[in-house]
Amino acid sequence: MAKSKQLQNFYNSKAWFNARDYKLQEQNFKCERCGGVAETVHHIIPLTDQNYNDIEIRLGNDNLMAVCKNCHKQIHRELDGKRTIEFDHNGQLKPF
Ligand SMILES: [Zn+2]
Ligand SMILES: [Zn+2]
Image (cartoon, rainbow, N blue to C red; front, side):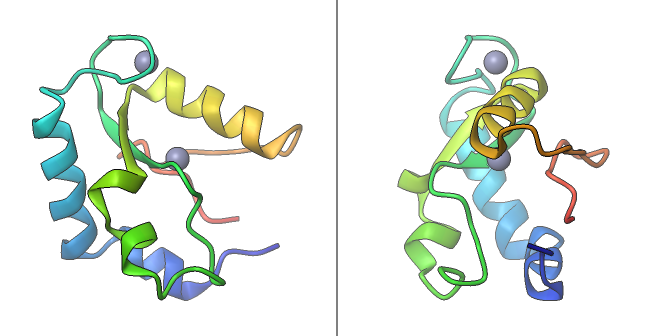
């Protein structure tokens, strides 16, 4: 399923950068999975067009997880099975 413009825009929004920064600082930039240096923030319940309007999923601190790039890749590999995934320079999942 292709990711929509809506999600792409969200990942470039100030609201997202703020929520991400907050989580990273709250975790002292420590990866919650391996204890390494967290560089990005993962949605525990993956954000989709279907749940986009749920602000707790979209921006809720409880649905976010500070992770390093490696763990983030691994988490998505596990979630997405064999689907090819790519990340942009911010470590965010690239829209398909
Ligand atoms: Zn990690
Ligand atoms: Zn993620």
